[in-house]
Length: 324
Image (tube, rainbow, N blue to C red):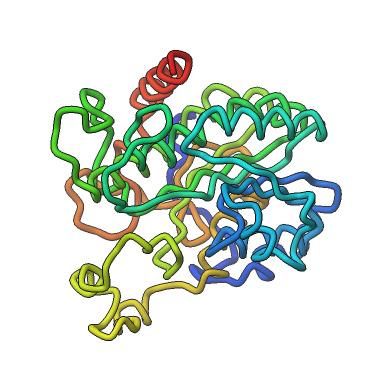
């Protein structure tokens, strides 16, 4: 069965904005091990909270461990927070090696961390920052932790994409803006397409080893992800008013951080998704496919679930990492 065959909504019994407690009702994660990147703020923090309350032992890699420890006080123990910088593959490798030396298997990995529409900059390995952090860093982390993921009984991997994937596919000729002018939103869209394609190819390569991978769009939420956007730009986008408060559009359409964690939690735990790995999800359901030229703000565009593109991106990413 191809991704296109599976990419259709199912009956979930959930609406588009359920609270974490509703999603995880009846799901016992006692004894399960989870890793959540970006787990100390925004929807990541709510994801960690919900998984922990359901019984999971949740680990949070963070660039600023002191801040993460403070933000997660009362949710996880300090020993469950480890140093990792997704913009530096050496840091990713050190975290992974240390983690696997202490833990035998991983049941849930949620690639939640991300950057959005930031000024042009480069990772330690010289890659454009948004795709370098959002895609390359997570690709390396997942590969480095693969022994733990395949050691479990049916691990789930969730990558956070976004409706922003509609902005851009992958520019395989100049992925890192070495020759074309940098455009922050195009770079963001490309990185979120990459996160979706990563789930597609993970399923293709590791599905027969018990892994199921999903990409998700969490929905519109006010989180630290917007830290690079001046209020004037958010006003132009229709997200805020001149005084910085949420616009009527945002108030009506945006989710709370807890609700924003919902689709990640659903994709990571819900039995309704058994056998459906590789699909792109939103609003606690499998998203509707949209035509390439669709102006809709929901659904998934064909380039984000294209299996040939997913395989090509995987090979290019793996080669780049091996040569870094």
